[in-house]
Length: 234
Ligand code: SF4
Image 1: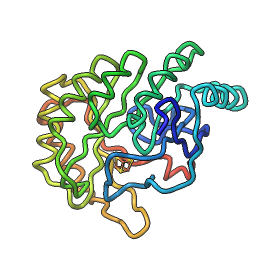
Image 2 (image 1 turned 180 degrees about the vertical axis):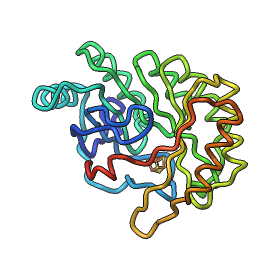
Image 3 (image 1 turned 45 degrees about the vertical axis):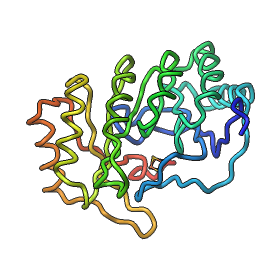
Image 4 (image 1 turned 90 degrees about the vertical axis):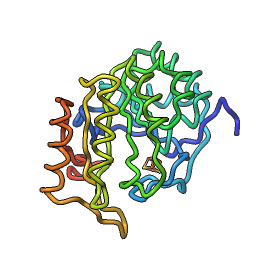
């Protein structure tokens, strides 16, 4: 793979559907590939991608902003954008120079890659991958290291919750946030059904999770669904 190019599946203008910037108009740059394989993933690794250089990507972003702007920020999403850390190192300064804010959507498992680009990131939308939600291994060590770096900028943490999510994982997540800074917002996002997968937790379970976070004094705790799916936008 050429480190100065990235595989990108789509570039489009829409509204942010998750987290504390929900409803904000953004340009989305969707990177192909991820280092994880979550059960509830709605953006799998397959799909047609084109190879972009920083220059060509910037050209497309500026054209989209000209036709659909102004935009709140440019969302770097995926897949996992930090798989392309070298590419981001050359692209993010160009984005800043052109006057765009960068919004990184990340699974929060690649702290070294974040460290290499954090100076040029404005907002970090970081996932905590709860093992009982993803069906995979725990990433607490990586998440803690990652969150400490991300906390140099504006950051919030988001966790997808399903019918399988255990209370202990919510407790661990909030304790970890408190270790870094209890003012960091924590968003619990009920899993949206995809294909054969439908594990949306019920109201009581959601309230129970929210109460755990609030009792642990994470005062900016919220339950927010994927709003773009409800709006029917991309
Ligand atoms: S980290 Fe995100 S993009 Fe990667 S598999 Fe999980 S849900 Fe999909």
